[in-house]
Length: 392
Ligand code: TGC
Ligand code: FAD
Image (cartoon, rainbow, N blue to C red; front, side, top):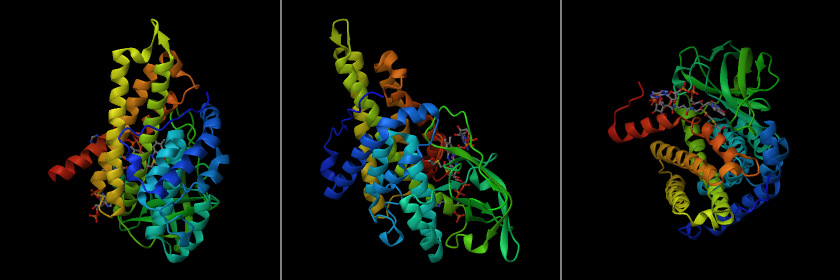
């Protein structure tokens, strides 16, 4: 990849609304991405490899459980800090951000919120350093947008539970040490269980040939009569609301993350448009290209403020699931549109790995589908404003 010349756009001086601590966290993450991720990311994406060598660095910038209290190994930071870290990581690559989101919001968060004190002590400090990596199993082959229909089940066998079923499209599954798995008991009630690699009957085959999120390992979770110790059940909350609370945390991070991808595409397109000459002028001098760039920075600025406000509400404990859905939906679509427009500004160069734009564009095709599809988030907002669910 060409040299990383990234200059983060901040058209309305959003920086003025951040604290000194936010800026320090942001600068550290930004500098680390430039130093450790940019130089390798294109190569690993082309090879469809998860870059394990960056796990330690991700832990050091606070990407694993920044909002988890320090007593459990987290950084005890606010939600705006978590968002900023996700934004900076996704500026580098959505697949890397996925690894961090899953670890923080989908593995550490449920153990912290719904786990026993023993589970918190056992897992959280090691997840915070990356010594243990985790994954989250909700989606199944027959149940994606409708996880309430899940077929994965466990049975109480007296001294242990017996788990059977399968999960599909699971980020981090091929290398995760533990999986937070959502399954129904004999009464049909959803509970979370911690499944550890090495348990007999548990396997995690990798899903290959993805054109998107190639730096993130995706796979299945297969449970064939897996004996789960009783102490591995998350005791704090049952029902579909428990995994949906985790999704709120992850979707919030994605709303910030997508802005990072958009900012990177816009920055590259603006620089290219000023440097590339056709018909004796920089292409930035043509009105058609200015329209594209103007619309991009307008949309980025709107998304930055929407998301910053969402962060304030989340820090105050007032952000609703529907508000989070709106931000995830808006920002991911915005980023995907900006990636497509930026790609065009670069002409043929836009399809090469010399620039990050095509990689962002392909990654965002997953981001617009996972953590609730674009359509599902529309229906969540629709239900919130009308009071009428239109899912079925
Ligand atoms: P519904 O009947 O509406 O709700 C069931 C229960 O849950 C409660 N609830 C929530 N609780 C907390 N937070 C939320 N956001 C909640 N939303 C709903 C609700 O009150 C109810 O509680 P109770 O006590 O009455 O039982 O559920 P539904 O089955 O009608 O589904 C609603 C719907 C469609 C919105 C939901 O299922 C949904 O969001 N579907 C999308 C599925 C999804 O997003 N899957 C993501 C899988 S993980 C992933 O993609 C990771 S990618 C990560 C990466 O690599 O970055
Ligand atoms: P479906 O639910 O089959 O939807 C197909 C289409 O139908 C979509 O366009 C959808 O919007 C539309 N649709 C569905 N229902 C309705 C409706 N009621 N009204 C209107 N339209 C509707 N899951 C996990 O549990 N853990 C993970 O770590 C994880 N990581 C992922 C990583 C990647 C790279 C990808 C691609 C997915 C990942 N997922 C993960 C799964 C993801 O959450 C699901 O793909 C997503 O929820 C959609 O489910 P589906 O693919 O089965 O699509």
